[in-house]
Amino acid sequence: MTQVAAGGAEPIRVVISDDHGLFRRGLRMVLEGEEDIEVVAEAADGREAVARVEELAPDVVLMDLRMPRMGGIEATRLIRQLFPTTRIIVLTVSDEEDDIYGAVKAGANGYMLKEVSIEEVADAVRAVFAGQSLISPALASKLLAEFSAPAMSLGSRAVDDPASRSLRLTEREVGVLKLVALGHENAEIARQLAVAESTVRNHVANILTKLQLRSQIEPAT
Picture 1 (tube, rainbow, N blue to C red):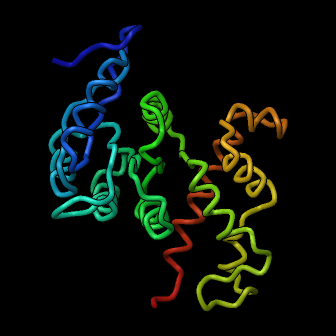
Picture 2 (picture 1 turned 90 degrees about the vertical axis):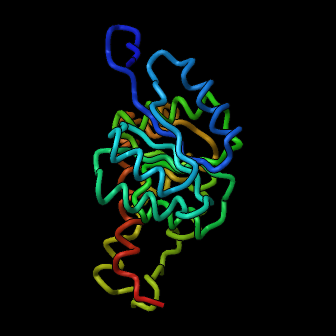
């Protein structure tokens, strides 16, 4: 039976995809303690996650990366192609650059490390359901190193390539990333920059979009 959140609204429907059963059960137990979140299914690998999304059309998927049969990056890519309205948060132990970039390029709406608190996971579910994109401090630090060089080029492309120039971060986007890397939340960033919180959210979304587009024009190696 579908539970009803406070105020009569239907809860946010979530699928948890992780190959560690104990972690799935613990996360499910805590998330289901939230009135506005309902865990509708679990998946032990990426292939099962895609099948559960096809069957249940959840609002949000919490996706691990290192799983048997099909990993989280490929599952994210398939879900994004087949079910574009489903939001995906990568929840993993990996802070490796290739994993971070791979997940975001595949279409993940957020990237979080498993060291975060359960409360942060619940807040992340609510945020992506509301249309926000999430960049964790760890991801922000990686992106700063990737994008902040003034003479950045995309692979072997020349720095005066119009496509390259269009994907550089603006000064304001770099400023937002620096504050995210320090662990500040959107509301605090908005106060420090004297802008609306919605503007901060737009900057974060633009940063992730630039990362995704970058992968599409990088030359093959």
